[in-house]
Image (cartoon, rainbow, N blue to C red):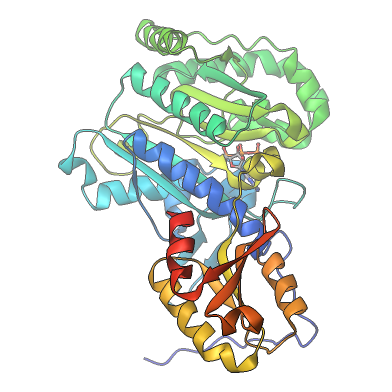
Length: 429
Ligand code: ATP
Ligand code: MG
């Protein structure tokens, strides 16, 4: 069957990255690698395994899980119709995708409790500003298969450990409980009653939220609305079971010596949350202070067509982690072990052979191909962050030696050419 191909227009002006998206350039990428490697390390010691799901999904996945009345679905989700007429969304978050995959691949059949983590880009059509992008990145965990309060405590502890590993301090963990489905309904009703007298002073959107999902009023970013809702008594009444569950989470956190604050205003902007919810804020980030958000979603797996399975998880925004990390906190060693500088052009072949043999031994090294002066090569070595420079040629070479310059100590000495590989290997071992 032939289909009509959409006519594409071509922009002939200088092309730039889309608004709200950013290139992560090589210098900054090191910080990203540091964050990712630190997270992978912490996730693995807590027993979490990686899952990678597609960036595109059927839009219905997010409408059904996050909720049709949420800001994410109503205003922020990138949705398009593909050539087959399917409604596709760029994922705005990963929990729904992980749950879809968990059900589709029967992950729960292999193990009682599935502990999964992910790292990757998410997409929301929001107004870009510091710490808020249209393509941003999250790293997070999902623990699917247990309602144990200790699991809630574990993931909160894990989130705090990750921050400490990244040398981020000054953070506050705020927790709350939304209870079970029934409790949540009661909480909604109580909040509706409490908010009703203030409706005229709240923004149009909050008036809409009042009708559709009143908890979202507490999530409004409008400072006027925040002022009003901060005075509203948001005390939640929970059933005996949920109250007991929340109490156990709190006492587990106390035993683990995790500092936290109970904040009844933490309600989270997504529909699927139940019982324990939490946010981590970092004081230096100002208005965009939420660096992590999470909580239980005990009904989501069943709602999405799976067996009734309790679960909990969280997500960190990587851009906000980067804002919270001070560059000097990142211990970034030299990026190159050795640079080979060639003084006499005819020594290039020998220099190149040494380069290859060092690389085979796992030594990160490089050379200049442009036949530049020794001074220019030294500048390049400096720029590349080389720990050592091996200078090939000149008087030393005639004696079967090379000059080995330690770029950190700013010292230089002669080394027998045949010993140079061992010297560098010993240093990097
Ligand atoms: P916010 O209140 O900032 O809008 P949110 O409640 O929409 O956040 P979640 O959906 O819970 O955020 O996502 C978890 C984390 O992802 C947030 O705490 C934040 O660090 C990060 N995040 C969310 N949206 C963006 C964005 N547009 N750009 C950068 N980071 C984001
Ligand atoms: Mg948001």
